[in-house]
Image 1 (cartoon, rainbow, N blue to C red):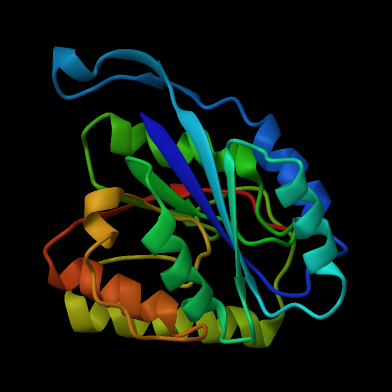
Image 2 (image 1 turned 45 degrees about the horizontal axis):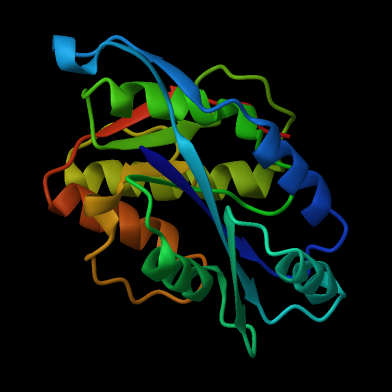
Length: 217
């Protein structure tokens, strides 16, 4: 199996090389305890990284150009001529993802790629096709600003009321799903409204979202 890590990038020169080192250092061996014998036992996933630079102007593109010249076989890099927003970058990335499973990774250092295994376990066990990493389920994290926390809580509560679910962190970056869940989903958002749009459409299609605790800094 293959995991595609989709990474929208915009003016991330200060953190891009560090986050890429962390992404590539993760051991993608998952010990499965499946719902049937066919899903039992460890599995090691291949890694595919799809980066979309969304019109960076701070020197980020020079780093990406160097990586392109190095012809890294596990990496695909695409450029937007102008900034369109996180949603626009993700939509481009999804079009080029070939993995059986897709996870979203921001290019800053707020999320820890070592949490991939937590995200993958329930999905590869066959328990759910969609897993969100929650920053509010007891994982190690630094304090968020009051406005950030309040806004996140309100949007998550609204999602729960509209769709009869009980999520704790709808706005999380770490969304992980089987490729068939997202690949043909019509998405229109260009900026951060991509988060509630994806969540709403996942729930409207009848998928259950499984949450796991993650770290956040």
